[in-house]
Length: 357
Image (cartoon, one colour):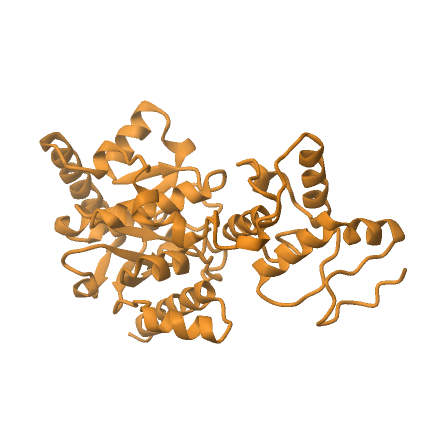
């Protein structure tokens, strides 16, 4: 069979009779329907489509993909999302699980029941099981002494070594939870922020850090002083999202770099949807942050930073309200994508203001 290309009404397209036979089975059709639910639009699905490269299913959408598949096939192994890379592998893995006796009754008749959506995953009862490190709770005098020393040291390095400046600090709410959404241009971004914000702000400010960096005794001590909560977002994305939500529920501020990685050329990259999910489901204010100069002082590939001038600017908070979400859903739009887009636009607008000044 010759693939004539995807059309609006086509569920799948195939290039061989064997592929068509696989896609036409009950598991094959159910997988394709689940993928289309995640993509939010009618499109053709091929067996060898790569989930990330061809279908734009990143780590966040993989969670949604597993939820959609569980609606059709029942509970899947926790590691399922990380084990598959293509449509073909999903179908084959589910076939293997069925052969091994997986419970596969369809949940399609009651799609609301047992559905672990982000709304459910970020509810208070789900967050009750999240274990935060001791330094995210009530501070001891030893902890206060440790972070005062760390803040003082970072202040001296930021001001003397990089002539760091700060603007717009009044935009940060004086109390209550909020997210700080910052561009990510350098390894030193978080340290610069810690070095310029007032101590009263830093007391409430937390960061998520890659867990494998903070296993040693010294780095674990450093994480406590720098208000870093170690997580493994690649393997345990849901836990990372719930950890962020749990910190916010305690009235903390959490800084996030929504690009997900450092930029190579200093230009702002697309944002991942995690920030939009948190903003929409938790309703907390999002303060845009623009960090300038760090890309030149310590770019990717450079061993050590060079002297230079850096600045940190905070913009007016963005908040996603219930009416907006209801309107977006009524139009059939992806509310998480639109929330993410609004936050990115606020960061872009702030960057333009900073560049003009």
